[in-house]
Length: 175
Image (cartoon, rainbow, N blue to C red; front, side, top):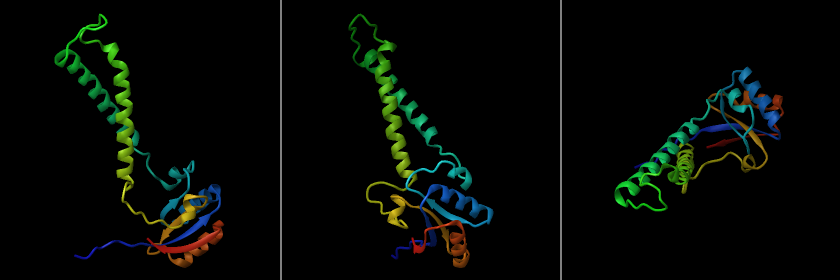
């Protein structure tokens, strides 16, 4: 059976500064150029609204995982201390809610943290054994990048765009 992998040929420009990147993205949007992707070594404030990206829903997943942790802790301790092993110690009743708070808090944080981490990795295609193509090693260090799909934007138009916006380097690659 043949392994079919979609390959996209992109032309990309590297920028030395995030302000240059922001100006270039705004210029691309004004010129109605279809941006394939934007890469940066760290989050760039204000880039998401310019690109028209929605806010992440990871915080909603975090709330659900936290609520699941709270329920797990509270219901687990309720069952343990009232049905499975009902022992009165320290003069407390079987069902002592104030005594449950520290463990409930810890499981809430644990479930939210692990759940959000796993969700983040799954959504972004990361994890053990995953090999991701990358355009340039310097993007993870100190360069900022805008990439255009060559089937959407001609090489000449992309070259002139990168020259006009101050890209320090222009390359192409199949990913």
